[in-house]
Length: 156
Image 1 (cartoon, rainbow, N blue to C red):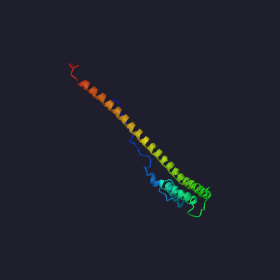
Image 2: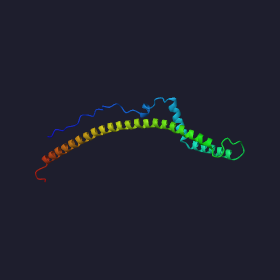
Image 3: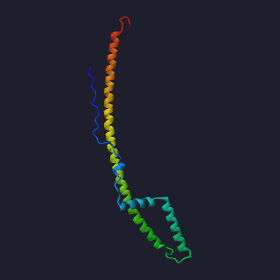
Image 4: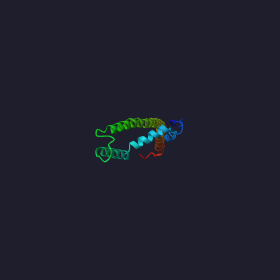
């Protein structure tokens, strides 16, 4: 009779799985909070519509002679305001994006570690299944041998 070999029971040699949100829950600084708020606000349809309406009002008020023109036709002051807004907004949005990129890097690394753990456990499961297949094959062969021995000589 062939000796059956089963792998040792799987030992979990890794720390328990943790929630990445708990790891990233550190309190952001005032500047980081402000950058996130600005990025969230500037990247919305509400902001785009309000800004478009304000620019339209600026344009109409300075073209039509209802009020004193503070920024006549080539709208140099409006250009300056929009340039300053875009310069500061771009920098602030980049601060927020850098924070998000750091979070994404941490999540990616965490997912990689989880995949390694899962692969290790799957290998252990597959080793156990292969050992069980061999055991079943051996048991089946032994049953067939026993069955053949018990057959009466006149049966074929």
